[in-house]
Image 1 (cartoon, rainbow, N blue to C red):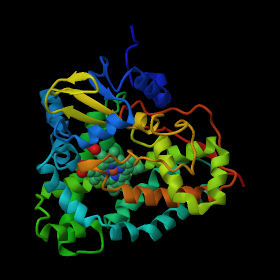
Image 2 (cartoon, rainbow, N blue to C red):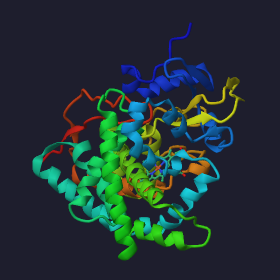
Image 3 (cartoon, helix red, strand yellow):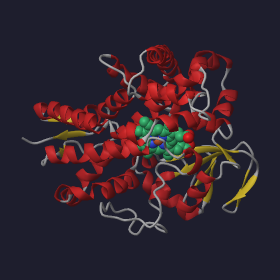
Image 4 (cartoon, rainbow, N blue to C red):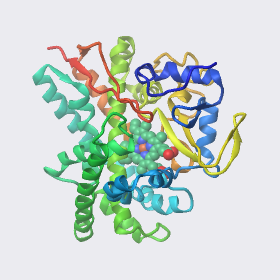
Amino acid sequence: MAAPIDLLIADAVADPHATFAALRDRGPVVWSDTHRAWIITGYDGVAEAFLDSERLSSDRLTPYWARLTPDRAAVLGTTFDVLRGWMVFHDPPRHALLRNPVRRAFTPRQVQRLAPGIERIAAELLDGIAERGECDLKAEFAFPLPALVIADLMGVEGADRHRFKDWSAKLAAIVFGESDNPRRDARAAEGSAEFVDYFSWLVRHRREHPGEDLVSALLAAQAEEGAGELSELELVGACTLLLFAGHETTTNLLANSALALLGRPDQAALLRSRPETVDTAVEELIRFDGPVKTMVRVAARTHERGGVTLERGQTVYLSVAGANRDPAVYDRADDLRLDRVPGRPGISFGQGLHFCLGAALARLETRIAVPALLGRFPDLALTGDDLSWEPQILTRAVRELPVSVGT
Ligand code: HEM
């Protein structure tokens, strides 16, 4: 009998790539009794699933809400009000209504104008680290950088910028389901209440004093024909989604990328010596150990997929990490090769209707932050060999990244 599939046992958390490789060998779609869910294991299946919004729904919020006990529902009411404004949890036609204004506002121009700010933020953070000589690179670089960038994007100033980091961490408690954190409901509720207060204020403020920021652009986009009108709460939802989606993922990408390069000095040397290859390198870092391990869908109706029957209402995990290391698509898939030019489109930002709206920003942050880190600290080295990872199904998140930066 095949071993039970548990994505949260210690080995699977520490090395999900070996776990997903074993699952790919079992078949294109496998059932986990532990998670009461299907797992789509390889590149083709995952790509197809991303594009199949008819049979695979993105609305995992409604079933989650329905399962909550009245006590939990009472604590999490505001959190769900906010999350219901997140496009990522909606199917057509509602999805387009929530996505269009953000898509119109979040333009390449908005992203490009952030480049000098990202360079400045990266340099300041690295200056601080240089003074200390040793640090937790996740806490002191990978975590604050995207939070400060997203604050810039949204036109948040001064002390408020630092509050972003805490809110995002609190909301992560519910979205990523911190399985070992008993306080997670309370933390999520706390974070949501603070979000709602702050963003309601910010939206009102930007209505009266529009600027170059994304919130102003979002308000302006609403006025455009066909962009769709968002309620006040949906606007707050859109802001929190951008803050959240733009923070945790990029933090983990930066941390995972640094770790990957620390383990492969030859590849770090390649990037240092050939900075013009940075775009290809970034794609490979996202593929190799990106922040998204799995995405979630719910079977919208009973259907066949990969030789098995998915029943309506069943949970389906799309194994992005498994797709990213699929040997049918990537030659020597377990090797980090920064000059890799894949024959197929990357899958880490999703595909189709829900394709990541922040992909350009995430790439820009990485293409600035990683070379800045390597350039500034030629002797960067890990100081601990006992790394631990967050026990989460959806994200690949190292807890701490202790490094010394040399002299
Ligand atoms: C390395 C960093 C990132 C990764 C790997 C990533 C990955 C993804 C993925 C896989 C999806 C698809 C979700 C689905 O199909 O259900 C997604 C959606 C989304 N991402 Fe990202 N993301 C990243 C960074 C960002 C950033 C920086 C932002 C914005 C500032 C952002 C905003 C969004 C939004 C708004 C959606 C929802 C799109 C929709 O549902 O239509 N992401 N992201």
